[in-house]
Image (cartoon, rainbow, N blue to C red; front, side, top):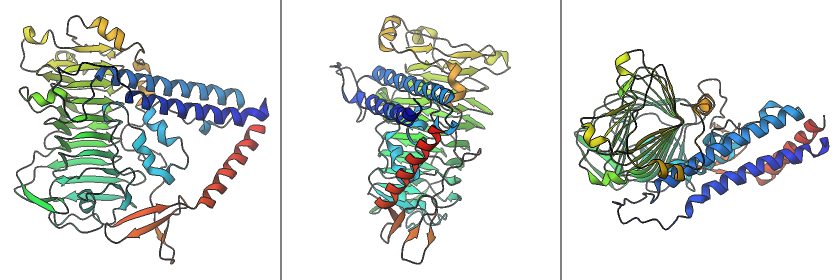
Length: 492
């Protein structure tokens, strides 16, 4: 039995990976849903209940893999780090690979929920930000972050060192971009800050976004061939405006002029996951106005986030659309946690809500400027939530119990798992997590050698980007050594 242990372990990992891939492909097949009643947006899913159901299946599978592997390591005496899965399906998708730095773009396959189709810069070149300045919003310098995000080609944007980027104006993204702050301590502050307007396929990962203020009344470039006059911005941390297939993951957001994240004007296909929010009044706004009908097609997943210190309201505040709030940790609010108007669908599942001490602020929900006669039929549901310190959720909607029982035959995991699922919410690498940095040292051979990953980068003068090339022989050596070490450890 001992000699078979390595094979069993590899089989378990492979089975887990196959299961995740199978679950991820499930949504490519849809029932013959009647979509005639939808105000369809590009990227809008015809069956949001199916997306929520699929998310639960992924979480359940990830937690089951964790329990299986934990049990396996206990009985075999294998080292603890072999039981990598945390139960958080996003993190387990890429962090369990010890060589993830050799394939950073694997991250693009790990999104869940409505934003799961966000490609970011997958398949594009790597662009290394070497200059933290932002002096000219019309003619940005190559090597700066602004120069990268306006390009028309897909780019995977990385940082070789810690950076504080103080924006002079809104940072306007073009489509197919990934902002990947893993391995560095990256802070984005200043005017704007991040604007995703009429774009698609953007991933923002592992950056601090804070102290954003209003800017504008000037020209700002949005592509290599276009710049235009920008009116005064709101001062949001991230503004998603008329965009789709957006994923915001493992960021830390606090202290901005307006909202930390706004998703408005017909945006859809958005996932906000694994973030840490703190020190702010109006946290997340979903929907432009009660009367803006295209937002009826807005679909947003809010999962595995930690709503932390000194937050007041809007976690989120919803106008129209379908909002899935799942497995988040709400550790206080001062007014309310989830609010809305304009008849949004709010599906709260497996969250932990801890009410403030103020006895007048125990209610999680708030129908904003709407009489009970109007909101009593709104579809607001709480399922599997844990409510502490007197917190309570006012549900509404008639005749939905049977529908929900059918849609969610896989029950959401209890909030008892919240500590595990939100353990690493926020920016990775700031609490003892040793993420490998993107480092480059000139080796005198006309290329740059990454000391951490053993790969080479080819510099492209046009875009300021660097593309990875991995030695096949080196990879085979690493794989062989890994297998030999595993066999030796298990036989011992």
